[in-house]
Picture: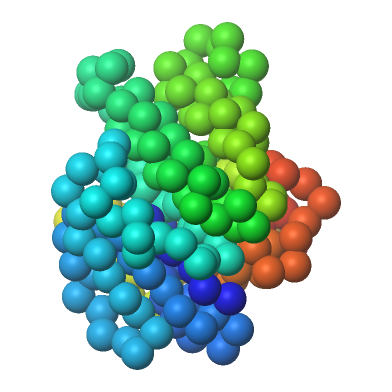
Length: 219
């Protein structure tokens, strides 16, 4: 399976990249990002691209892939509403529309979050934006599309947030988080389980198009 990965330098993307590289069934990974991953692996190829609303300059390199793992995401805290919508909806749809045209047999997996509002009518802004993104992705002519909604994620295998204080919190609470993964799978997963689940769903399919944390852990 040949995969395209967006967001490989973020915490979620780092975990997914790691699982792709250790999975023998994944033969090639193309990372598309604004900065290099810093990872060296024979299976990994990278494109550094600046404008995530326009992929025309790199379209010739985006064809022939079986799956896309879209792991880009930002927090809405303290962010202007239009800016958040642009970074969450516009960028995702620009990439997805391009890939759907170039790879009609592709499986597209998108990482959203627990509490996403697919009615697009609820009181929480980020949830409405994520909900619209999910809804519009599911309308695209991919072979299949899956929405992954993890709640909490424990980073493993050296995966780190770009924010230093978050890394400190994860370090201190690691034993607690490990216990929560076992005791409350509906609220906590790990970067390893998330990455492995995305690969398996892209390869084998899944009965649900929207997967919550308990589905991710069960897979």
